[in-house]
Picture 1: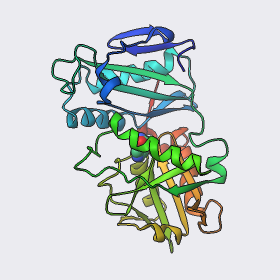
Picture 2: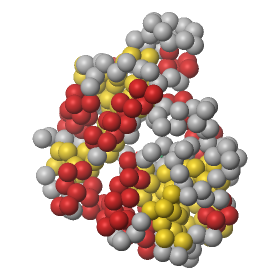
Picture 3: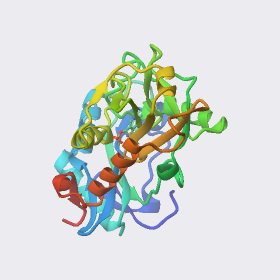
Picture 4: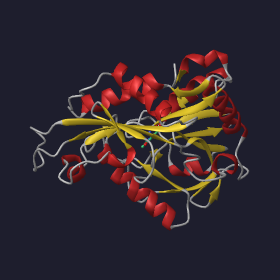
Length: 306
Ligand code: PMP
């Protein structure tokens, strides 16, 4: 990732990609305290456009607030920077990564006295769960690792430190031949994927777990709107793993993963073992929105070169 042409924004400056470096004593490198966002831009007839940028930047602000980090840049400034990261790097579609981290002024767990830094990078990133995942669906396993308890980690924040848990889960899943992990909460109910929210369809009804232990995803909220437009309501409920095994459809949602159908859970086939009609129709509507082909949701897009 580090050896390429382009520009990365760090603390108010556009640096050549290879020069965007931090000191090895950076506090966040040692203790993982910080937060970030993942945003996508898509090619539209008017040029590259960022999808639901204000919602992502609001969550970034909330994440920093939850972690009691002083954000040196407001959301309006960061919105312009995210757009410029796409434009300056000449990208037609992109994944955009703003990240807030603590500096290298001090050692020790207590970050008092460490400065807050912000960086924004953008690069081309295809299907997050691999070639064919969106079309063919993926196989997931229920992880042996539980998702965070809200009294252990702040689950509303997209905090860097929560991702050690995601990494343990995804490595375990891949080692065992699965594409992705699904994590249960500490009460044993389905929480979310390592980097996605989860939905289930049964008898024409759409369900999702309550988000107590899961991230409140922007894609998930988009699915709520699109499902409503399809005449479906989304019911939050506690979902057990065996309920999931018996679902007609399961799918994951996330900025990176988009809407990815799940065709097997723990080696149990889901529905017909192929992507189901609800997931496929949601995908169709989602991609129409992000590509600027759905007038009703034009306000979800912000042109990178506005
Ligand atoms: N849960 C986790 C743990 C995630 O990392 C993500 C990706 N940000 C999501 C859910 C989905 O969130 P979003 O739709 O906002 O990308």
